[in-house]
Length: 368
Image 1 (cartoon, helix red, strand yellow):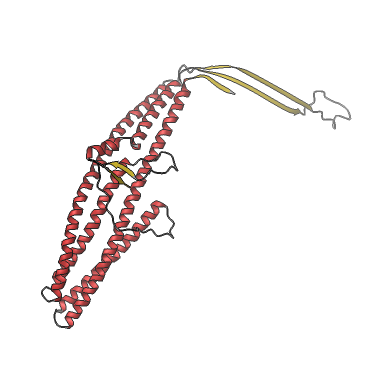
Image 2: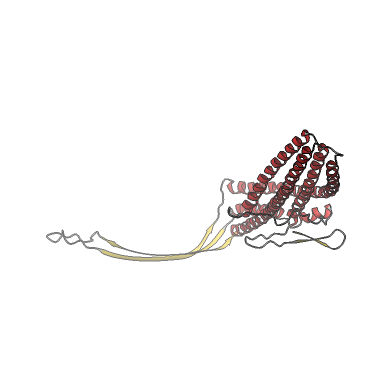
């Protein structure tokens, strides 16, 4: 039994272990934020692939209907054979793009399934089309400040730095005296086969005397240990720990700059994506009206198939542009949430969703 009465190394070791545990908890919380971002981006990618699949399926059906009209008009002698060949080529290209989208859609399904650890027998689908998240309610300065506040990535680096400093204290404390109260006790028993009296005569061969022995002892006292000299090993180890703590300080500054860079990039991308959505929706409205007009003109013989093909291509690009710009806005929104999302630092604890952010002017906006 040992009981340390004076041990300067013990307090520093306990403080080091506590800081290491705190750093591990913050690293867990930061990884949970990153996993939340990966799941969100994968879900938005699956939404986009599913939306593009619907669009290109509609394009294939439209091209098939146009081809049937061209064949009917060709049979009546109203359009040349060239229009039918162009319509057939356009239909085959649409089928090719649809096959590509099908492969992308299934790939996005497996990507999300692997992130969520879903069995292979389960197929994930998005229950709704691409839907835009509300605009980000904070300005850039308030977003950066909120990203620095209680950020587990920064807290993990700070805890790691404190752990290295406590490690240096523990190494230095190895040269300090230690006073210990100890107590020891023991018990033993055995049988000795060697006889203490040597027998002679007829009975010597059969008589093997044995001696049963028992013994026990105990002691208690104080023990003083003091390492007076170790050739500079302890001081060198303490200096190495302090140097590692200084490197962690540099990593802390780099991490803070990286967080600011991520927040600024996501903020600007989100603003640009909102402007792209407005342009894409305006383009889609114009392309849809143009498609109605050119199809009617073509049936009346006032337009050729090139006009119809170009209008269909513009309409398809506009529909895809709307879905892609919304997905880009949602992805940048998820990037911003990654830096502000409050997450637990203990395994098994639930994540608090949705996150309520104060609006820039008044009211509140909720992002999930």
